[in-house]
Image (tube, rainbow, N blue to C red; front, side):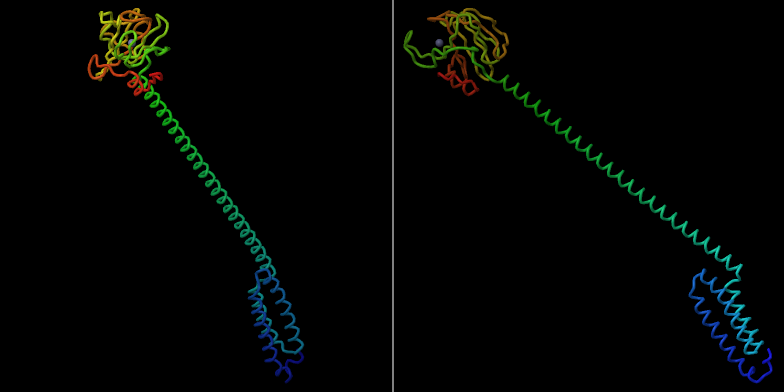
Length: 301
Ligand SMILES: [Zn+2]
């Protein structure tokens, strides 16, 4: 103050003013690079800088320059905030930071929930897919089982049909005593049938299902005979029975008992004389070949 009117004081003023401006610019520049909290601290530093400038101005004796610089720094300090405002700013900043943190946590929580929901959705989809796969497999297995059952039923039906169409020996148990052949005993003749023998009275059965067209002793040498028509121009004859079990016109099943073994007619002992006719009645063919072609093998003929 005592230098206010001295030439040195007059000379020093622009220098001080310039230094204050430089200082302000430097502080402003650094201040702009700081974050909110540091800006509050910088406000305090600016106040200290103001005090320093004021002291310098006082030392150099330029009170008007000091006033100007003080005004500049105060104006700058006001922008940064008074201690009260700084405190408020700090609280606001802390609140903002807390809010940001809270928002971030909420977002993370939301993302986690979304991830969990997505995982649950995926698990559910996988479960559904597995169930569908299992159902498809079960369906396939059921279809296969049904197909197998159908096939088995068809096979059974075919077997039954084969059996119905098949031929059997005219006796369940026997020995062959004569084949379809020329022979001299008991007298020269062409033996046009096969002789099957068992004990007297043994059951004689239909070699195939059909209709009885003859049953009885016609005095033709066959004794008690049965003739069955099988259709398709095929007949079978059973001779020399002791007694009969069927009558003319009766339908018989394959293997059904039609008579019992005996020795009636031109016979030297109990046996069954069996003939097969093809094409027309009394057209005898070799029964062995015929039966063999129908799955019945008379091994000894
Ligand atoms: Zn015979």
